[in-house]
Image (cartoon, rainbow, N blue to C red):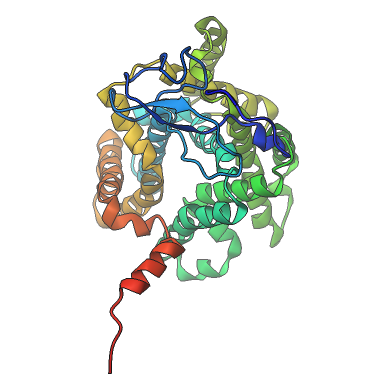
Length: 397
């Protein structure tokens, strides 16, 4: 197989994803020719968040069964970082309102403008990595998702029990949908479905999930099934965005090269959608085909715009936040809830700013201390546990 080419299709649709990149000789921080790939192409992507001059990515053939390293694309990490900070801002505002204090009108407008693209975008970007993950052997694939998704989901959901009451621990639906960690439950289920349905094109899975979400009417269901209907509605709706991302993931390195003439109309439509949401004071939250379509168009438009921005220190800062987005996602909310209970908060933008600074600040400190705090967000691998046990001194009589 020649350098910079994609592997031939395997036995499943997922195997047709482009080959994995490996680090090549440093040239510059932007996409361009290299000795291995003489002409620019989607197969020669930049190293993403790596600083300029460190390395660029050179496409080399990789067997579909191999567990190759994931490429990091700067604009994907930046989007993830911006989106998770907007989640913190949303929860800071809602905490203030739940305390009976006046909200910030500025933050209300921001939340209305980005609401259609915030969580759908996080799910879509997560799904863009599914094709790469599925290259791993099934056992390694599942172990990784259990360690890095299921573990922080369950641990930080348990952290919220003092706020919701210990009785919530006996309700299965609360673990899935009752706390701020519901995002991780959707991602985890998405990865399980991706493995089970790896022979099915992800776009078909997305359409089926969206159709189910639109047909579901939890308010029409009473009794114990009502809560399960709410879980199903959220799982199917946001799971649909996850699989849209999986479908787009095969072309993620092509996105920055889409001509601006093609992206002009989607960008204008996205801007108008956000403007209308600000005027209405809220973003459309109902499950419908038009809302889904506009969310996807908006997310892709924002990703494309971010991909046009040259590498710079501010972009790398947001990319760093994006690479640690799971830390911010799980940590900020208990910090905000605790502060809301223990501190007399000012109203308006001052109160929102205080809660945002506390939630984001504590999260960023724990992210910066990741070598010492990683087991709060990542369960130790079996091999590490075995090595630790072997290093342990054996008592002698």
